[in-house]
Amino acid sequence: MTTMVLPVPNPLRSSPILRPRCTTTAARTPSIQPLPDELQLVAEVRSPHNHIRVADVSPRAAGHPLAGARLLLLDGPGNIHSLSFPRRAHHCPLTATYFDAFTTLPPLLPRPSLAVLGFGAGSAARALLHFYPDLSVHGWELDSAVLAVARDFFGLAELEKDHAARLFVHVGDALEAEAPPGGFGGALVDLFANGSVLPELQEVDTWQRLSGMVAPEGRMMVNCGGGCVEAEEEGRDGEAVKDATLRAMATAFGKEMVSVLDVDDSWVAMTGPPVTAPEKAAAWKARLPSELRHFVDVWKPYNKKCGE
Image 1 (cartoon, rainbow, N blue to C red):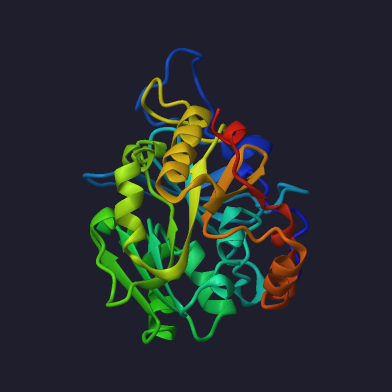
Image 2 (spheres, rainbow, N blue to C red; image 1 turned 90 degrees about the vertical axis):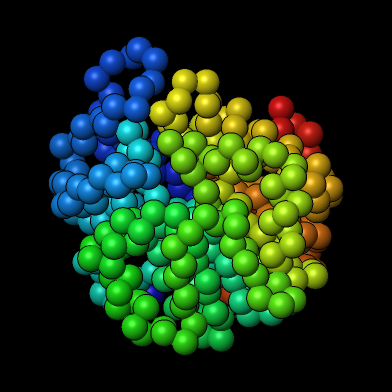
């Protein structure tokens, strides 16, 4: 398996071929933006919750880390919610996106179980199950149509069959997900609606409730978005929403218990004691596959400037 050379590239900002072409500079609207020429539409589904599109990135997009990728696009702006590389040998689960950072969490957990809140087409779950044979994954996805598309176009049906004893996918509101007795070892939170991080994630009470899902000494990793995220609703600026999400987390857990990873305006947060001390970082690296060790070095403690 080839090591990804980009720590956490942001395909939406650094790769204009992946962002739907805007036809106007006026205020954002929920209208569905057309795909750029480099994307080929594979399927399109409308559900009560989403406008779902599956698109393939041209394999001839030379030099681009997502050339040949299959994308799950949701919402009017067409933000990417899952991706895979079906043409790669052995279906390499790494994506050169923040999903790879998510895959580093299990070695830090007190037990090998993980909740994925915002399952999408299963990009994070595929990598987690690949690298950690003892890990069980429970995913929640609100939209059953997204899961149907995932099974038809992203290999989720095969993934469920191959890992029937370890992968459990639930249809329902992730904010109402139920944890087993004692809680999950950890949780991944990747919840968006209308092209923006879910508004509830800017509320302290939400994080206090979600913290009850994980075991003592468990951790959460969170996609906080950033300037790379284009919302349907005017005023839901991605950078401001990211800052508000981080502030709510820092209030709920204590600012010293939140770490952040920021590359190209794509932010991931992690709860729990800092892991930046050399001895802790070395111990984390030692338990990671070689393809993922570089992520350990790019975390930093949350501070006030992160939320301004």
